[in-house]
Length: 170
Image (cartoon, rainbow, N blue to C red; front, side, top):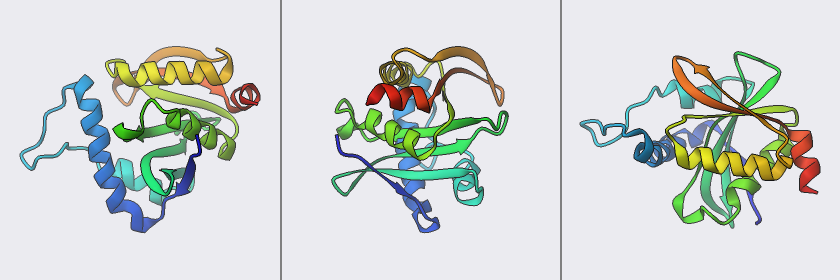
């Protein structure tokens, strides 16, 4: 699967905000979030804007054959700066189950080598299944899972090394 990560620039904020609504819609089937009176999902826009303000935040469009297929928002984890954190990750429905998500993660790992974590809402069983399988496949099951609090919300954390993932992929 040929995937490209295209770094976002400030002019891409409106596109990312639109795609973030699709991301929230996708998660709403697990999280049962309500739609606002304006027809969208409410969220703190600073989550998105931080990726354009902070030097240790890296927003990417996931590209497939020149088309935006999703996004990956990578950052240094603020509560443990030794970790690289997948802040948010989204692949449009028409691109799922084709290996694009795994290829995008591998591209992120190459750009940001180190110790990684992915945080998943436990109720988001689709994402949890994707991440568990993808990380297990990439690392030959050399990862750790734990539950914990992230800003007042229970999360499942998956920890792994990009080195073990990239070594297993070759």
